Length: 476
Image 1 (cartoon, one colour):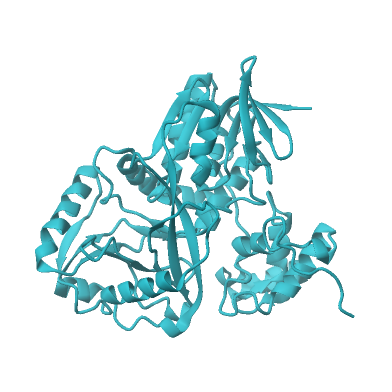
Image 2 (image 1 turned 135 degrees about the vertical axis):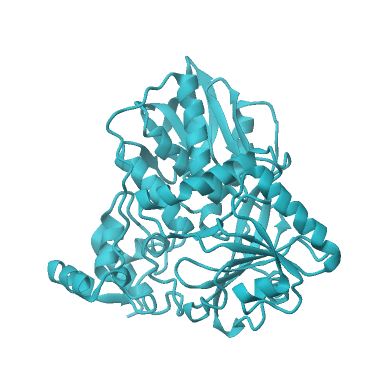
């Protein structure tokens, strides 16, 4: 038996979740279909976590428009959704006097795009702001409006707030075929038949495949891999701003940036792939990250690297975001690569308004924009923490020692709206397992908590997707 909706959004990454939250402002029945086991399992979970200023995108493009607007919206969005966000500023480094005109071009483009506060700095001015910059630097572009955000929390914030306002999320529900009949799109998924008057395609690296189910072939998505190294929190103060490299004959460059949680992030590379599921790191890629990062910043504490990872960007052959009604009632939000994370609030608003206008939806009066994240004990005073433990002793039992995450936080993550059902789900909501030991000590304890709270046998507790079960039986 099929289920009927006014709108089906395909994809629960940051773009799909932002669109879902904005659609929740309207009097419409909305669902989100996600092929993964959770929110934020694709591109949105493995990226640079940067809120870009908007000086890089081509003037007049959708990327430029959505970047600048999304940057402006991020302060309010992060406050409403209780998401870690910081405007730490950014420097774009120039390493050759002959390349200085390129820095001027970036400045002029940024001004044309509406970016505020841009300034070109001398080597001395840049070094005064960031003492660990290398001697290779000859000049830099300063962008004070750039920032850093937690991509997991931002995506979860959009999704949880959408769900709290009535949007239904369906996981492990990948779309396999779409037809149209009697005014409805018929979506055949892994689980159910979904009927919807309108469809929003926010399927990331599979957006071209979804588009081609409904419309003539118009664009192709090329998976572009980016490899990163992540350093421990002991390295988080090595730089205070996000350090970019100006594109040059050496390539597009590598960034060095603090994260909102105090780590230091290096990367990404850029390698075009055919395999849309290949997220392994390579020796060559990680070597390139380290050698290129050293061009920008001296004495990078590579001994403090605690993990490496790779993510896939949805690069489209048009070179710009594709945000359009491609067929009556079928809307594409495709090719959302960088600055997609920054642009998500603006894309959500833009696409929801487009859908609402086409479908005749009216705003509802009872939309609640506020979402509260999992309580972070580290953010509480000693007195507040003691009171929390008195209220619930589980907050006094530390499970993840590296990140100081308590059993209370993990239980909250499991039972909240769109709660965690896997180890990675707990990790993205609480950071349990993201510290120096990379879950080496806390995984068994988190597994026990998941088993207990979800009433699952330990043999059914997974790291993430189907097939990632961790234990298969007792040895004794």
